[in-house]
Image 1: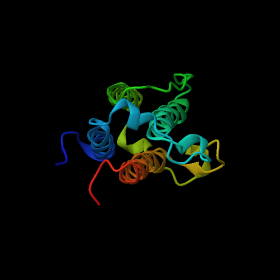
Image 2: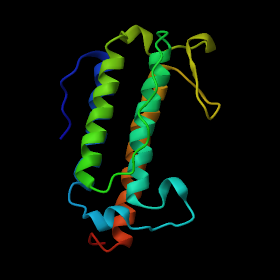
Image 3: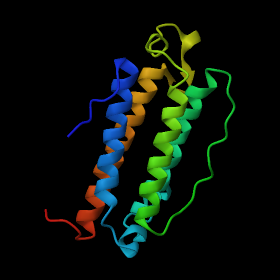
Length: 162
């Protein structure tokens, strides 16, 4: 059930982002250490195992927030990627990444989320131009897409019923 606790457009984005992360955390909470690190797709560096997917998701969550933070002239280096061997560590990493996002968003008002001209947008490392709202929506869908991928991996590992 979604928590509807924050106000305004910024609050809505953060509530939905938090819900997506909570759903991912719930999805991985019962993973064994062996299942976490089991290689399912050996040819996919960022997505060969649930472990590498989660490392990528945590890193990306920081990256999106850093892009947004840079609009205020802030400089921040995201934490280095860490391959964890326990799901509980990823649950905490996801919590920490979301808390970092909350701190970044404290510096923005609803009126700053949407920009129609390029001067107020963020150029990402993959050459896509976003305003804050669009990049945050991308971050939310990123979590959900990888949650779906993890659910598929769990099926392949025979961890859930089909």
